[in-house]
Length: 251
Image (cartoon, rainbow, N blue to C red):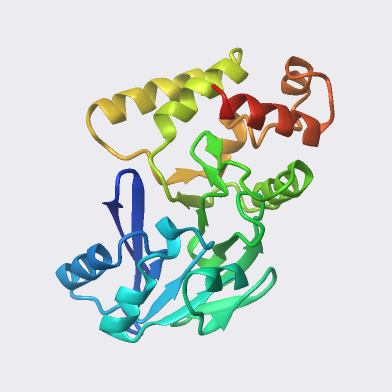
């Protein structure tokens, strides 16, 4: 079985090391802090052999150089990563990368940035989604357009509902406050928000999350819901998503 080590990085990022005991390979999923990744891998007794970047932002690819210098790790990611770091393997939607015998399917989840991708490991029921979707939220639309971003979220929505989503930031408490504002009659959301408040009060992480829970509670994944559409202007899913994202930006 794959082993996952999650740890805090920078001010609110999470780092992820994914280790395959059978092959001895370890992949760093994004690299917000290269030195911290190296320390964490050493503590686990793992050697980082690969880096999988989701997008080009420095808090996701800024540690590549330090890890490569220390380990010689092979770097895989979308072309946009070359804005700040070299790639060994450029991937796009529909490609497959491997960690030992485990396959990760590359999914276009652009919108936060124009080249953003996710890595879905169907055999392990997990996906590393970067800043495309968060527990009860989604990334800011820095480079994309509403239709593009909604199409990306729609691809995430089609994954098996039991998929565990490993998102990159601890934003859930603030996301929950906006979600309650956006969808106040959602009973499932109210219960989820209470659980989040309790976990954060105990300084526990709220990441990862399950897709089926997000489908029931995350307003950005529910932009095709008639109740939300009526509440946010009566438009279609793309218009509702755009209205929600604009409202969250100024919330």
